[in-house]
Structures are given as C-alpha cells and as structure tokens.
Image (tube, rainbow, N blue to C red):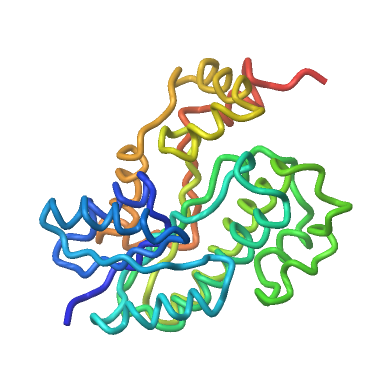
Amino acid sequence: MKDVMVLTGAGQIGMAIARRMGYGMKIVIGDKRLENAQAVAKILNDAGFDAVAIQMDLSSRDSIKNLIGEAQRYGEITMLVNAAGVSPSQAPVETILKVDLYGTAVLLEEVGKVIGEGGVGVTISSQSGHRMPALTAQEDELLACTPAEELLALEMLQPRNIRDTLHAYQMAKRCNEKRVMWEAVRWGERRARLNSISPGIVVPPLAIDEFNGPRGDFYKNMFAKCPAGRPGTADEIANVAELLMSDRGAFITGADFLIDGGATASYFYGPLKPEI
C-alpha cells in the first residue's frame, strides 16, 4: 500500500504538479475522457512514476465517489490535485456551472471526508475569479457555505442572472476560491490543508482553445499588455503548488494564489483597464 495522490483533469498543469509531488506515491488520474487520463498516466509511468487512469465525470457525485473508492484500493489518499474543468469557449453556461462550480465543491467535500492526516490539496481556479466585480459579503458566504447539492439553485446562478459563458466561468472560479476557504476549516479537523491557485494565461490545450475561440484577440492582448509580457507555463504554476503542498507551506491553508504575470493588476490599474 502507498500514499495516494488523486489527480483530476489530465492536462498540462495537473501533470506538472504530479511530477513535482507524486514521486513514491500511487497517482490516480481521473478525467472525463479516459484516453486523456491514460495518455498522462503513460507519460508519468514512462518517467518512473506509478500512475493509473480512471474515467471520471467531475459533474457527478457518484463518479467522484467512485474515483475516491478506486484510489483507496491503493492506500490512503494524502494529496489532491484538482485540475479538471471546462473553459468559456468549451461549454455552455449550464455545463460550466455544473462542472467547474458544483463539481469542484463536491470533490473538495468528498475528498475532505477521507484525506489522510497531514494531507494536502490544491484546486486550480483562475484569474477570472479575480476579474469580476466584488460580490456582497452575503453572496460570498452563500458560495462558500451552501450545501453542494443546493448550490446551483442559488438565485445569483440562475440563467437570467448569468450574462454569458465568461460570466458563468467567473462565478464558478469565485465560488472555487470561497469554497476552498470554507472546506479548509473542515480539512483542518483532519490536520490536512487545502488551497487554490488562480493561474492567468498558461499554455496548455485549454488555453489554446481560448486563443482560437471568439475571445482569442482579447486573450492575446491580455498577455501582451500584462507586466510579464507573455503567457505562463504549467511548470510555473507547479512551482507554487510545490510550495503549497510541501512542508514549506505548512502554515498556508484556505488561501488563493493569483499567478497571472500581473494581468489582473493591469486590468484594474494599467493598460488592460476596460474603457468605460
């Protein structure tokens, strides 16, 4: 039996984090497309890791519980890396809310019930959660604390209150950040830690879909006018995940880390600021 890392989402960011933190562990990779999970498992196994692929739908509690059950066959779950999700150009509003918002809430809840003592988790959010106007304290608390099965019934998440897929994505990522704060308290009862990372434009396949989608020019302009002057890489996100998931981050929990090359700073106080 080994300590187990559960990795959801077979993308470049999740794989980069797994390579930093998954050595000596069993890495159980869940993705809606089994072939994607198998491809990442092969890369990791060929590099000397011990990985296995499982089909998993983040929008389904039953599927999440099945993934956790399969992972527990190999040992105790001590790490969670949630890098699953869909972007504004990949899915309609309903799917974005069901996967990115509801699914993440359920995953953090279910893993939090079984995470081993001293365990740690990170969930990948997005700069988009920082880009929208502030919500009220009451709205933030609803996103943080509402039982997962009631989240999608919140008034603020009804179709009449969601402008488009980008707005849905922003709401989902704001919810992720608030949910991590709430769940970090529950995880703490098991002496486990949980944080979120909010990347800016990074170049895995999901970002390429955005570059080629209807907001492609917007995104290209974004990294051209951000202080870093470029998009990021998956390994730069993994640098921060390594801090958060290692003993060096032992006092960090319930926090969100914005890693966007300064794009959000430029959006509010620089050349990316929208013209009113």
